[in-house]
Length: 55
Image (cartoon, rainbow, N blue to C red; front, side):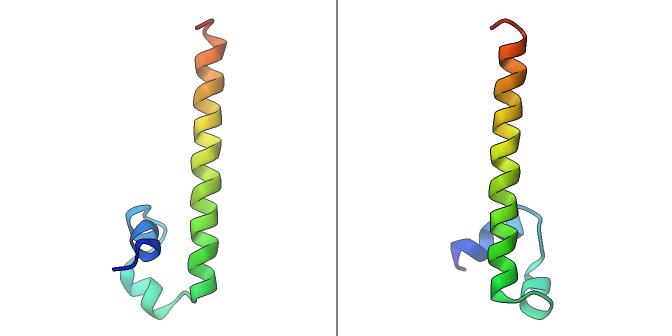
């Protein structure tokens, strides 16, 4: 299975059935971009939380 498809499935953005029947290839790339932004925002928030504790 291609890594891009596996990433979307493991990120729980879509099922394999949805990728096969509902979403286009472009949609899959949008979902990957959304996952990337979400992960970046979580990392920044965690970094900010860590810094606000004086550590």
